Length: 213
Image (cartoon, rainbow, N blue to C red; front, side, top):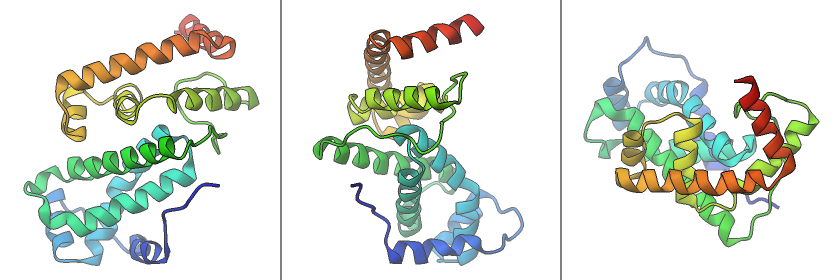
C-alpha cells in the first residue's frame, strides 16, 4: 500500500489557495509577499504554478494522487524557503527546482521499497492515439518500463520528451551539467526504445503513431 506523505498540517497550510486573487502581480511581487508571509501571495503562487507542477508530477509518476501529494510538498517547501531566492524574477525556476528534488526523492523511495507497477488512474496525454481500455493497459506497461530507469534518467527524459524543456533548462533545473543531461536522455531513450520494441503492444502503437504522423 502506498504511503501518503500529506498530513493535516500540510492540508491546512495549502487550504489558503482558495482565497481571492490580488490583481495580476509580477513574480517578483509574489516573492516579496511570500517572504512577508502574505496569504494572498501563497494563493497566487499556487494558482499560477500548481498546474505546471501537477502536470510534471503526473507525467513523471503516472498517478493523480501521487502528483497531488508531490505538489503539496513542493509548495510547502517553496513557502518556507522563499527568502532564499536571490533573483525574484526566477520564481518559476525556483519552484521547478523544488519539484525535481521532490520527484527524485519519490522515485528513489520507490526503488528502495521495490515499488510495483500500477494502473494509472486516468489516461495521460503522452501523444498516444487511443484512450480506451487497451490504451490504459499500454500506459501501465510504459510506466512499468519507466520504473526501470534510474531517477535521474527518468526525470531528464520526462522533462525533455514530455515537458519539451531545453537541455539547458533541464541542466539548470536538475543542477547537473548539459553533457550529463544529454547522456541521461540518450540513455533513457535507448533503453526505452529497446524495451518497447520487445513488447508487441507498445511496438505496434509506436508504429501506428509513426504511420499517422
